[in-house]
Structure formats: C-alpha cells, structure tokens
Length: 401
Image (cartoon, rainbow, N blue to C red; front, top):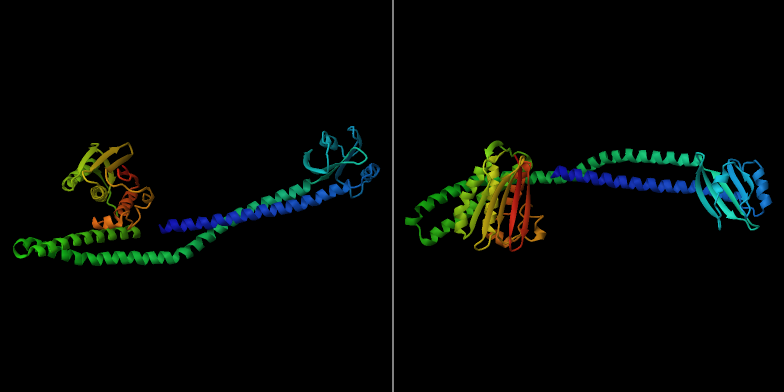
C-alpha cells in the first residue's frame, strides 16, 4: 500500500510538472511566432502602403533593401499583371481577389512566404510577399529544442518527484510501521492471557453442572463466548500485521480443492440447520490447485460464516466449485439481507461494517473480508461480489491453479 501511494504521488508530481512545461512551451512558441510573423507582416504591408500604382511599380523596380528577397505584383481589375517582382508570384496570386487587406501564408518552390493583398483605389489589386522561410526554420528549431527540454525536464521531474514523494510519505511510513509493530506486539501479548482464560473457563464448564448455579453457568458460558471472540480477533489482527510486514509465509502445495470445499460445506451443515437455513452445493470433482490449503479453507469458512450470519429466516446458501484449464471458481451465494450499492466498494476495507449494530451483535469485527482479500490476492486471485438488498449476496473467488 505504501509503495503504491508513493508511486501514485510520484506520477502526480511528474504529470503536473509535464503539463506546466507543455503549457509553457505552447505559450512561448505562440508568443515568439506571433512576434516574428507580425514583424514580417508589417514589412509586407509597408511595401504596398502607397496608393499610387506608379509609385508601387517604381518601388518594385528599385532593388534596395525594402524589396530585397520579396515578391510584389500589381494587377488591373481585368486580371492583367501590370508589373511583377519575382517569377513565382503568378501562381500565388492566381484567383486571389481581395475585398480588403488580407494575409496568407503560402508555400511555393520549397519556400514559405507571408503574403498580403488589397484592392487599389484607382482599380486593381496589389500583392506583396515576404520570404519567411528562415524565420520558419528558426521557429521549428525553437519548437524542437523546447520539446527536447520538456522531455529532459520531465524525466528530471520524475526523479525529483520520487525523492519528494519519499520525503512526503516518510512520516506516514513511520506511523504505519509503529502501528503495525504495536498490533503485532499487542496480538502476541494478548494470546497468552486469552489462552489461560480459555483453559480456565473450559475447566469451569466441565464442573458447572454440579457446583455452579444457573446464573454462574450462564456467566461462564458468556465469558467463554467472549474469550473465543477475542481470540479470533487477536488471531485476525496478528494475521493482518504479518501480512503488512511481509512476514506471513504461505505454505503452497498441490491439494484436492474439491475435497476441501466438500468438507467445508459438511462442517457448516449443522450450523446452517441450527439457524433455520438450508445449504446446497454443486462441486466439480477432481479439481486440484497449488496453494496454502489452510488459508484457502479459512477463506471458504469466512464466506460460509457470513452467509449464515447475514441470511434471512428460512434462507438458503449455495456453494459451487467449477474450473477451467488455468482457473478455479468458488461461489458462495446466500439469500440474505444483501449489501447496499454504496457499500460494495468499501466492504473489503479493514473494520468496515455495513450495519455496525447488527455486525457487533453477530460477533463480527469487520476485518474478515480484508483477510479474505489478502489471502486470495496472495495466491494471485481476486474476489468479485454481487448483491441486491433484500435478495442476497454472492461472492465469487477466482484462483489460479
């Protein structure tokens, strides 16, 4: 979880940095491009600023700096070119009759020009083009350099983001580590007194018929139930602490999953009957898988236990085992109270209970599903859940062989 959070923070920092860099590149490129092209456009407009056709022709014939490297043409209203400056201008102005001052960027003979055109008061049109090939090449090089810098700084930002994420999440890691150590130590310390209490209560239960009053017997029974519940909670907490610290080792072996599921169903048959429920099963034979037999059984027991606890009067439970070439599917379905849609994404969180009052009365501590998900994911599988309020819930355990 910590590694995922750290990686998520790193990517958030990196993506934000990249977006800011790209925004800077776009704004810088547009600003420089508009500035350069605006200057060239003003130069082209300046060349046709005279209203007299004779002045325009005279200026076009003068090879001084103002017309150097530029194109110029004067056209009559009938389309006849009175004068041209530049051989390639004929194709550029063909069919272009401006109503007012217009500008265009045109490619011609592997050169790029910025052209402006406007009608002449005396009649006809005048066209002026400025060669912007060099400026375009500069802008393209600038864009390439900016993109390369963006890529370079993005990688630098990813490294910096990794360091910053590590520093930002450091206090969380320390806090989580201390919490994990506390849960682990507390669980170990509690197991011994609970074992002593459990042993003492068993002795009292054996002697209660002859030596204890009815009230004392009920008290002993209640105490035994609470000790069993606390022992289960401590074991679950210890399991979670070991899973977080990576100290939980799964003992994987090839085993008969069909037999394991069948035995689990039989083991719960009496509990199911005592609660006024019925259970059916559909188990494919000779299904084997490689995994921790004890942990897989723990998962099956957990879902069967939940199916009993959260079922309705005269409800049903159905267990199904099927397999494919690579996967096995264990379905535990009940006709119980169901889970509201808004809670489905949270039920695997630790200590999360949909109905806290009912869960507490049933002895649920809210970490069973978290343990089930951990065990299944440790085997490379996943758990799918579907539920309808008032109709029931189905849990599908998907495991690899």
